[in-house]
Image (cartoon, rainbow, N blue to C red):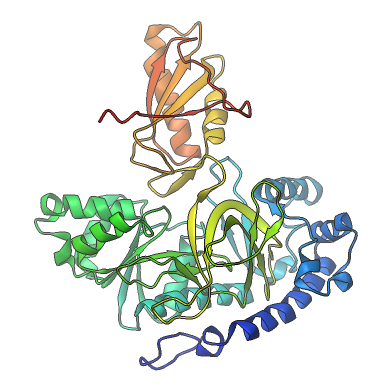
Length: 459
């Protein structure tokens, strides 16, 4: 791993400071090699090429590259299942490296019930560690600083891969995670005295509000100099950034990227100008029109669905992968002086909600509730105090109990559903049971049932 003097502003100046023209040339060189590798080592990717009627030899430009069909999370999940059925494991179709070279399996949160897997070789792990180092070095962290990681201790991409990356660049990591609850995080904040905290913005807000009663002093007295927002919106919302900055007396950073090749971090200045895309040598970023699914031009201010392609990647190299994230691109030079394009994640193309850092979809909630039919009718509403995606916990649900459910059984039914969602979706909802046929079924212009109800502002 690179070790540069403290006077350097960039972790890897050899790559991070080169011109856009040279980055584009490097991307093209690595892309050609990656496409050949994917084609030769993955049944799934070979089929993608055949679907488009091309081979890697036919791809002579970035425009040719865009002829390859997009990959979606649903498709990813389907191919994993197909691999299990054919080979007895999920690595037989997308994973390109031989199984003996795979050293880490990372995962999404799997809120729809089936996590999507990221397979990494040691080379890929080192790439991920490099990306974390680039982010935290830009922010000003150096060996000797202590970082408390209060997101996750799990295999999720923002969990152990993040902690490993912090350690790999020579920082001291306190991997507390969020699983142990607020008291555990606060205990270790007081005990280990970190200069940096990585957490959800909502936890930061909570700590600022509750610190006087919980620890007898203000959050600003904890000694936090850097607060890194992750896992939910807020780091890019100016009012939240201002609250966090004032509450902790710290620099506030919005950043993204876990156990894969797509990473970004904002400048940390008071004005939010988006996140700098810091991994263009390992990830090709595209903008996709959400309606037509055609590639859009990457011009300043353009808004579209994000697609990414991993390059110089061995394990499970994603190829034109879309997650539904809607982003805005900024190509004009940033006032901070750091190079490269910037992006702002505006939200999801669907109705995804975020509760305490957990991504949750209405379709997953619907699936969970329908598991209890006929004890429930399957009709429900998600009740929000304000538009999502960020939801102040608990997630409130109103749902109909089944026709033959007696009054004495209803509390037990609520507990069954709540426990299932906590165990399988990682959310602990507040549930209101109502009689059958009491929730009106509303549909939008497309016929899709409206599952979310936002409280009207009475002002």
